[in-house]
Image (cartoon, rainbow, N blue to C red; front, side, top):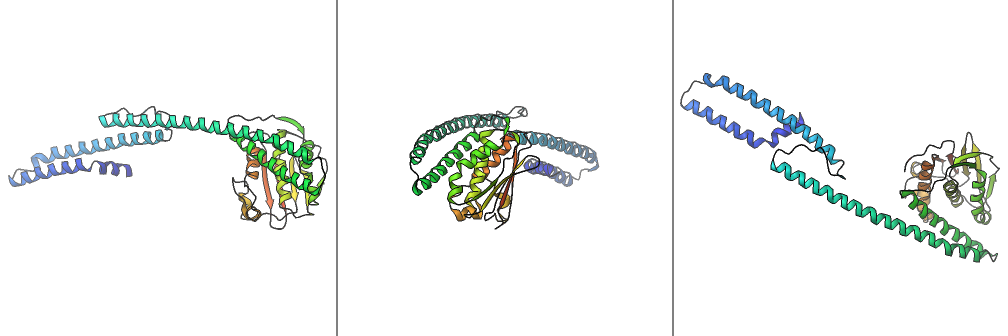
Length: 330
């Protein structure tokens, strides 16, 4: 009904002109004292026909309106199935729509090419920077001092940031290098702990970990990134001398628990959002807000789920459910 009134409003000039003609006829009949009954019946028939024409026109316009609205949602391609043009204006509008769609397709193609070039550039940059990082690591390993240990930790953080960049680029690319196979979980965990062993030692952290003896269907490299990110956060927000526990919950849920400062209740629902750092991240002033975001995206791509439980001053528990392996498209 609302569309019908809108249809009448847009044709108000024609309707006003018709009413004006009717008024002229009525005045003429009154001035010449002509019998109204002679034209009343034909007038009613004409009014009924006019109303029917208005209703049919409104229905036709309504169908055309709905079709154009649906086509407007897919303007990346030249619309097909447009209503047949009835006037020159309709033909002109269809030509304009076609030109706009062609221009949009051209701009989209150009943007995709530029984005692909940018991804290639940053991927090459991230790979190239790994070479001097590895060289610096070998140099630091030649001596055992407090300076070399702290420099090694800083170098590890740089390496993690580079890995984060590569991970981000690969997740947004058209192709990924997932290699799924059933494998032991313990070697992945030991590799992550070994890379972070310097921070465990310097901060005198207690690690509670017993071999889990479980096999999971996953990608080793990507799961290693997730575990390392979770352990890095646990080390960052757990005071020196705290405890980090790695255990397994049935059926195949990896549980990483710490005795750190915890997460504020208002931050907990948003810690996996892109760029969100929360109270702890703002206090630390070094958080990027990408670590847990990438962990969630990777887990979804691997068919795993990740969730967090925490409260202030009571530590944090990160659970990664490895029992499912249904992939979700990114």
